[in-house]
Length: 395
Image (cartoon, rainbow, N blue to C red; front, side, top):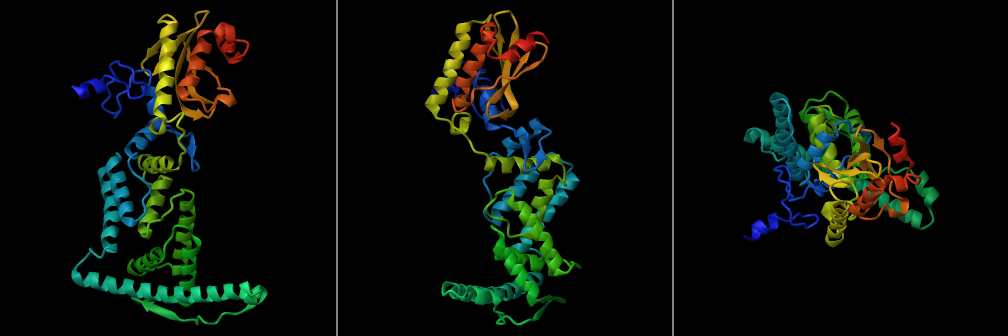
């Protein structure tokens, strides 16, 4: 019985009316609140990280599919993230299977679960060798850096800058038939230190893959390639990069749309979700409940007071009839601006630009809508202030 009572209330305005039944929505919402609530949750940017969002409805679906994923902080979470993406998209089965198998195989190999026992043992020994080489040189580099800092603290900065540090002697190492030099090792270590979110474990796996995959490129070219990917990755503002070079490369391919827009939008949607700043006045999930509720109740009261001949709630929009009989329709704007979260149109689908005043932009969204509704209902009275309304009459 209690559940039935709860289902008769809108979770946004608390109004006791039958909520809109929508199996795609996890909220019980009335017809008035639903479009504005969902638009606040699944809002779409016109452009994001250099990509134009040309399919806003697809982006909304992607936001919904990725809403429960937080930023990955380790490779287990990155693996779960990729699994979720390849499970949720709609692509050709063969292509998707190939992509997923590549990720799965890489994940198993990094846990030394791929191949027979002898292969696993050889891989463990190789990885341990690489790890030890990098550790030795990292320790030497740290010792030199600490000595430089001590000289600088004592006022010997110019001397420290000119000093030739010869503690690290040139050497080379043979790894499964491939040669890596001291200079290359130092460059790899310095890359990991210079790029936020990149670990030395990434460097170890990068060398490991270079050896195991029979990559014919010099390791310094491989280094330059992943440095470029890592720098692009910084634009995504994710604190922790994956330790797997294959994961980083796969993320970059998905991000750039190499495997289609569906997969790209899942990546972009998750990044957008992690980066966007939510304002309690405009976003349902972080709303101040009482303020939000009272605001939408006020909007409903204004619409009901105007009466059905002047204002009514239609599916997905608010319909208003002005003093002179002109009809207007208000619905959420797909690409919102800070001063205009709505789209106002006429009967012949003409757009009317109505911005909220700068000093009112922090008001709750429903309070702003109250102003728009009253302005349109009294279009003849406010016409001298909102000239775009007048222009719509002659079009």
